[in-house]
Amino acid sequence: MMKVKKAIKRLEKTKEIWEQRLIWDSEDDAAIKEIKNLNTIIAALKKRISSPPKDDGAFGKCPDCGYEFNSELLEEYNLKFCPDCGKKISMTAPGQEREKKEASWKNHLMDRFGRCE
Ligand SMILES: [Zn+2]
Image (cartoon, rainbow, N blue to C red; front, side):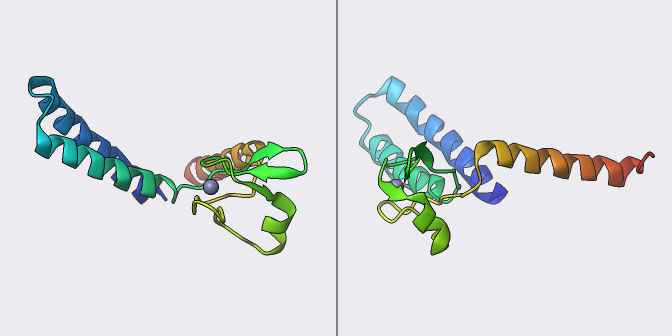
């Protein structure tokens, strides 16, 4: 997952370089093509980063395309991707995600500095 995020950052940097060429020549064909291509790749990679579904009552919505699905069904069949656009879906609520991060940070500190009782 971190690898994907790093790759996206690098691609966005590359995109900025091409965008600078458009400042000098807004009809630079090579730059326009590269930027379009990079946008496609970045969008595809972003689908690999999971987000929780948008909560919409009984139904969950894909955080990317808004496709509606029954979130209970997702859990039951252990689906991990939006059936419509392929966006990776995580079933943990944002709150739970934060708790998990805090717990792993705590463990990291304890391993490093020892547990104090
Ligand atoms: Zn979707």
